[in-house]
Amino acid sequence: MQKTIRASRRTFLSLVAAGALLMGSGNLASAGEAQDQLVEKAKFTITDVASKSEMEQFRKLLAVAKGVVVFPQVLKAGFFVGGAGGSGVLLGKDEAGNWSSPAFYTMGQGSIGLQFGAQANELVLVVMTDKALQAIISNQVKLGGDLSAAVGPVGTTLGASTTTNLKVDVFSFAISKGLFIGASVEGSILSSNTDSNESYYGQPTTSQQIVIDRTVSNPQADGLRSALVAAEAE
Image (cartoon, rainbow, N blue to C red; front, top):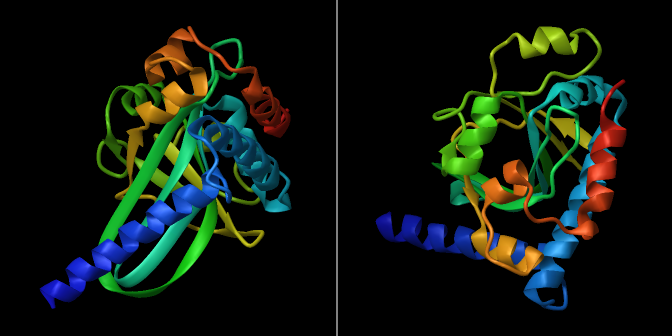
């Protein structure tokens, strides 16, 4: 049984690695091109999620959010060992409502259980508190542990002022094949991807410098920032 579990873990990690390569480029693009494509896909993810009629709450929360983490593809797999993994970008919003350039992140989630199948989902984490944004920037964090996390509300029954009073650090919104799914992210671990940051900005840089200090930028992300502004509910 232990050998089966170890083999299953290796299979899952191989699938996650393969998914990361596919997100970069089908033709094994260079590291810089891979980051460009991830940012471009993040733009389409924001536009896609915001366009759903049931996502009014997402748009309202985004308007008052402190930051957002966008995963254009989250590979979910099960082979006795279930889990999820993906690459994404974190952007912060300042007091004037301006979105930062993207910092690159990875997400990992694992659990033991009899699960089968694989599924690719688009996932957006809406960061609601300054504490949560700073924690994601400063450390590797566990959602549902270091930070509170909840599945984002859908429909039109709640206002943004109501949901922000729920004292939740992070709301998750996910879609699969064009449909909203209530995907829990509890147990997921967010980690900064320093190699991708360096590839995208052409120099060693930290998430703090990108998201808070804003000492570096890349005009290639202008489309993603514009998509976030367009997605915010007025």
